[in-house]
Image 1: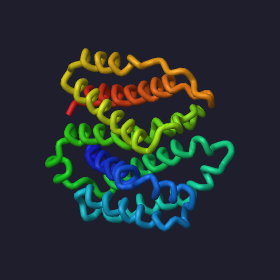
Image 2: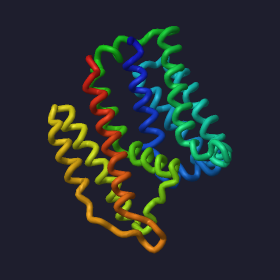
Image 3: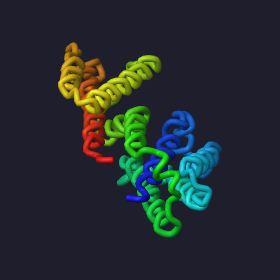
Image 4: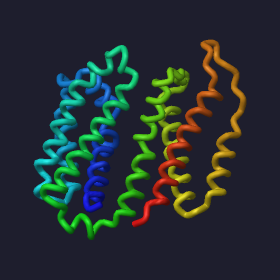
Length: 241
């Protein structure tokens, strides 16, 4: 358990770098061009610095460098994975699994070989770190996860919305998930049920000319959004710190 703090802050560094600090334009450029992307080197530099600074340990610099280099390799080959006929639709999930698996391995090896400075273990409350992490997960990462699940199951996206409506929908999703987190953390489970019921009251919308059904689209997205928030909020309530 002594490496738990370090593992959580490294996970936070990953979320910040791969999602919060990265806009869609740069992410698309990186996913399409791989090693040739001009953004990739800045992405890796950001990851290295974030990983090292959040570790609160000078000696973690080489571990952060290893994390950054392996991240660079994985992201560099991402375009080839995207183009693979068999694995292409799983590219996002494979990419994230590899990144997180490397984080876990590096942190465990570092902890066993060098130990963890007491400052990280005793000055930063693990419960606070977990709460901060789950609120971070329910922002942009959850929006992207829902989008990738839609792609995986070939669920048609709503292309009739303009950019402003799409951004508004993402913001609404984040606020919904935050409310669920707050309600579960304070033990107000009935409020969660009320929120789900209120969101489920949707107006029936017939299919468009292209066969798209907005009601089904919104319902699937809503259930995925609520499912993510409920799962991680219930999980964190069982963590004893």
